[in-house]
Amino acid sequence: MSQFIESIKVEDQQIFLLDQHQKRVNETFSYFGKNNLINLDEIYKSLEHDEDGLFKLKITYDLAGEYRTQMIPYAMSEIANFQLVENNSYDYSFKFEDRKELEKMKILSKAAEIIIVKNNHITDSSYSNLLFKKGKDWFTPKTFLLNGVQRQHLLKSKKIKEAEITLLNLCEYSHFQLINAMNDLDDAYRYPIEKIKNLPKKAEQTEM
Image (tube, rainbow, N blue to C red; front, side, top):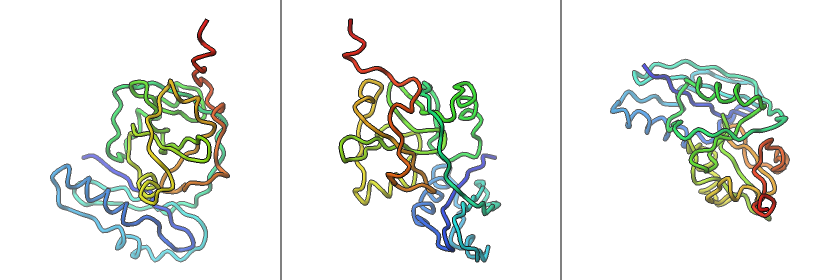
């Protein structure tokens, strides 16, 4: 049976974006025609977590309603470099625990992290949605693989906008950053676009 995961931010005993996580779990059960829902709030309360600091609550569950939990101390680390990897067939519409294909792409790239390109459109990294900066504004690709909870939250609060981001216009952006349930919009964690090792050259540079 397929296994799914939810990675939820817990900081100083406060849990974040719980409604969005619960909505995704409910939609997963509904899509597969199951009604064995799990209640994330009840699961968190049952843990009686009383430690301060930043943690990732990882809940692994199946469609029978069985689950297991891990409370993992979390710290964001800087990524040395990125590489664009083309994969036109990969599908990650649900947050599956099985990440073998993602890990395979990452190993073959020989980069610290990958940015997956699908039909010439920018999608996500191996574990995060992406934001790209143009001027003062941050944009997220319309062509995501997984519509993450942080991505939805930032769009709803109008802190970011959607855009069609492709190999052709990627160089129009100056910086990018990774967002997920653990990582919010934060200028301190942005990367210059040149951190992408195989960044396409601007059109005027390639014309002879």
